[in-house]
Length: 569
Image (cartoon, rainbow, N blue to C red; front, side, top):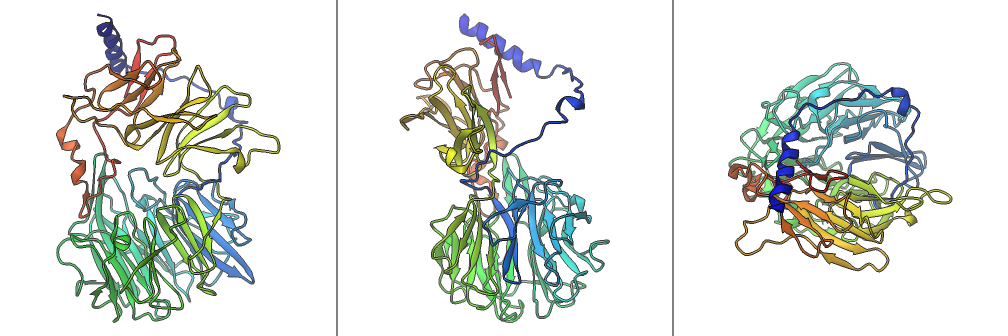
């Protein structure tokens, strides 16, 4: 009877979500004077989505575009960085320095590495004073831009590779060109409203020679489809006035995401990765007219919808880098690949090869920026860009209070809100792995922390000793398979010291800090079988990382002052 009564309160709380909500008016003066201050951490970085660099005299200037942390600039060769784009959208997809004027920089907003957690952009921006001021130059509905190319002789001629909307169809996608410095744009290569541009490259010696990958894709909360009849590889010899779709030597059937790059030292050589039923790495020796498949390598072909970048050494047409989970390298034009940068953070999305000295590399990863001066054999982490991507944050009641948070691909961390001399990297400690999500301190014992990462996995940790225990609820005999969201609902009771919750399709409650669990609700989701086919997600390349897990609970909250009332979403 008692369980029934408690469940009635839970059902009432869920129903109350549909009731009209009262919106309080807040005087802007109340919070208008507050200013945010950074407390870090930069001991680990966040996802680097794009970068470019240029030598100005003997000083290396670097621009780094991040997934959700804006644009950062270094004037001292990666020793220090400062944010220069904070008044605009924080999601960056492309950064390109004008080859004729190092103070002119073009930025395409909206990250194009199309995970379920990417942010959107609002078009193209340009600075002519090294990032002091910015002008917005259109293509606002492109949502995400992956590449910008500036003509090597005519700075007013610029090409944009617009990937387009991730969650729906839209018209403003494909390849765009301006000949007046961004005042106006012409769509020069479009397929349909479901197909955008995945990559764009130019022969700098013959800048009218262009190559473009076009990509049909669509994401839904429970499914991702990469590939379709709209995808293809195109080439132009007249600055984009006309295009030919290239097929000779490439896979037959539907294609997915395509990356393409011209070898600067020998422009007749072009490389491409092509997602297909038989994904592969391809080389052309005749300006992209015909193609030859090169060596198979899982490091090159893995997750092609997410890792789609090729960088050719500017001085050696046979030396090619393919960033991915780690970075693959070939020194013989694709016959053999080896992996480098295994000592760095995983998931590589941006790479710059120094045109003055191709032994010098900059690498952007999910964990920040790295630098190598020996062709990638050894790497130095440049930990001065605090752009960690927090999914959730919480705090304790210590003095000063500590901040806890789970980070995209960087585990769970905590650090003080203040410290003598300011909060520094050394003050932050790691207490969890994976993609960190919720982290809560036990109400009765501040030495105990509950941490969660993808798929509802949970641990209880004692900070003073480092002792951990796995506490995720497990299926019992006769139970259906539990469905936990990528970012599952976890909650610590505000009323009882020993009580925590986690949501799958059911609400689970523990009264002993996770040592045991009870299922206290029926399936609260739609339980739609059409939204539970994650094993088929990915399109041409099956990709079931649990990021599309659906029909699951996302949030739980216990009513302060009444432990019998739960709110569930």
